[in-house]
Structures are given as C-alpha cells and as structure tokens.
Length: 459
Image (cartoon, rainbow, N blue to C red):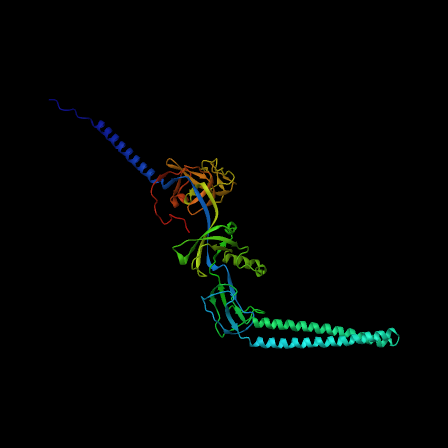
C-alpha cells in the first residue's frame, strides 16, 4: 500500500497566510461594525394618537374671596359715647331695627340753644315789621303835606329815608330768622343721628365697637367704622385677573367656582362686572418718577378685579377663598391636538412655509450661534430666526415636523386651525422627546412612556 503524499513547505505557508488574513479581515469588520453601532443614534421612544375633532372651551383661572353683593359699612355722622348697643356680631337685623345710640346730651343742648336763637329772631322780625308799619304811615302822612307845600323838602326826605331803613331792617331780621331756623334744623338732624337704625335687611358680619366706647363722626373726619351689615342671601366672588387675560373677560360669561370650604361641591356663576382700572391705581401714581414706576411694576403684577355672581344658595361667609374658572371662548367640533403634542422649532422667518402647503420644516435650516442661519452650502445668510409651532406627524418609522396654526385651548387640547387634518397620526409623548429629542426626519419607535426627571413641563 502506497504512503500518502507529503505537502511541500511552501504550499503550507501560503495556506497559513490566507487563514491569518481572513481572520484579520473578520476582526477588522467586527471592530468597524461595533464602532458604527456604538455611534448610531438609537430611535426615540414616543407615544402617538390619531387627530380627531373636539369641543374646546377656553377658560381663565383666577383666585379671590367670597363677598356679599350688598355690604353696608356703618359709621356715625356725629361723635360721642355709645350708650346703647343692642346687637352682636352674627345677629340678623331688619331694615329700621335699632343698631346703637350715641349720648345725645350735647346735641339736646345745641338744639335748645338753636331754638332759643330762632325764637329771638322771630321776635326781631315782628319788631322790624312794626317799625316798618310806623315808618310807612309817617311817610304817607307827610307825603300829603309835602304835596300841599306844607312841609319842607328836607323834612320829607327824612321820613322817606326812615321808611327805607325800616324795610331793610325787616329784610335783615327775616334773613336772620331763616338762618336761625336752619340752625334749629341742623341741631335737630344731629340729635336724630345719635340714633342709628339698620338701612337694610341683613346680618351683622363685623362689629368693631363696644358699649361705652367713644366714636368719631364722619361730618369732617374719616369717622369710626362701628359695624358692617351684609345681605348674605346674594353672594359674589371677587377675583383678580391679570392684564393679559382681562381683555377676554366680558359681563355675562359663565364661570365655575370652587370654594375651599365646600371642596366636594362646584358652584356656578355669572360675570357681572369687570374692573375698568387696575387695583391700587390712584391719582398719586401719575406723579411718581419713571424710575420708581419701573421699580414698582417689577415687584407686583397688574391685576383687575372681576366680580362673579354666585347662582346657588349656600351658607357662604364673607372672606372664604374661591377659585374661579371663567369660560371666555368656545369652539365646537374642531380639529384638536393634545397640549403636549404642540411644540416650537426655529426656522427661517423669510421662508416660513404655509402650514396648509408645507410638508415639513427644511432640514437645512440650521441656527448658528449668532442667530443667523446656515444654508445648504454652510454659508451664513441674513435671514433671522423665528420659532414656529409644529406638530410631529408619524410617517413609518420616522417623523415629519409640520408647522401648524393654533387657536384657543383648554386643559387637554389645542385648537388647530391649519396644518393638520382628521386622522393624521401625531406624536403625543413623551414631553422630553417632543420638546428636545425630535427633529424633522428623526427615527422613532412606539413604546410606553419613560418617566424621567424631565418628563413633564416645568410649572
């Protein structure tokens, strides 16, 4: 039996070189593949939904307090000591019920003095009338003598002047009597005002003074606010609205009220009044310098008071905290997109596409650090950048950034007036993906939302 042939050394070396080369190529390929996979951007995980029609109602939310519609602050018009106070806080009163009495001694004395002065003035009028009657008789008698040339002219002029003086004295006495009568009326009015009765039916919600205290009248001073009477059968919410939203508020608009003390119940209301000037605005503000005005405006926002009449009856108390949602505008059966699905992207303001015609934002529109744009050739242009509202439409495993025009919104949806149609599949989450990760043409994969520290908008 013949032995197998033995390979020569040169052929064995050649085969070994081929094997080593093949192994080397395979290793390089694996390394290159690993590098490519490492640098390949993974698809963005998103959630999607179909565009549909919705009823959207825009609301303005504001905080405030509950107050009675009718609230009367009781202050005396005369000063003195309270000698009778038959009411207490929380008591219900009827119109005309006695609220308090002020010591009338000083005003009784003043009335007596005014009455005596008036009676004296009346007597002076009677005396002046008698003097006039005598002067008039003397004038007429001597006028006849003067006509018959039996009386000197100078004597006749004396009688005439005496009558004129008597007429003037009667007029003066009459005026003095009228003044004295006015003094009597004033003294009587002051005496009457020492007794204060309730001007309305209501409840005493605030009682600041006690029996025996001295109070200051409001005739020439600010006066003492003794108590407050409120009609608790008709209540309203007084809320503060910012200057950006107050232009949307009109009387007659509906509102939903959430009173903290009745957390398990919602109340309805109607806007009755919108403040025509901001709260805290007065004539002195016009005299402040520009610098101080700028400083104060930076410290506090401009607010306008809006009053909302509560339609339901409940045991409200003045000062209860309330949150109002006022319905400002409403749209029925319109294209809507979830709030989270609408974001902004910066594109060339000179060549902004019409949302009705554009399919996507040009991918070669890139913002440079100085705010200019770089074209496809990398050269800077003078076209300024402008952010536009966009929605990402799903196309297979990629997204397309589509500019949209938005209208009103509620807590869940934006009204889309242009750019989307019913049935379009759009990206609705997550927040970080829409606001940061996604761009036109970005690869995506549908999956559950990933909760991260940046998964929701900042408040």
